[in-house]
Length: 164
Image (tube, rainbow, N blue to C red):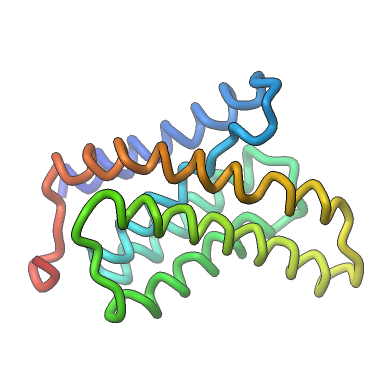
């Protein structure tokens, strides 16, 4: 139980670190979403309830730290969780490279959900070019950072007993 809280605290610290450090980088595409690998790990390797808790907690924390429209970050994190929960029995993650590939895919999916949310909520999409331009490089950077995150989370050896 303490290992799970330590991983959760690590994830919240990394999200706080992400919002404070990556805002100073002049490179726009080098801004990964560090919540996505944690949500994927919790959904695939732990129970869906723990994945939901991680998605809601990280969604609210990114909601507090971002300047995005209210509720959009929480909605996109829940969309990542729901799609991961749907794919949980259909995909098997056997290496960190597959985990990295899934992190990249879910990061692009999160950008598409954000665009769809803007279209449904306002009827228009502002900055669609910027979001679509930076979605893939941001996803690549998220995938690159998910490699050491997966190794770190595997080092804690947190697993659901029925998924081992």
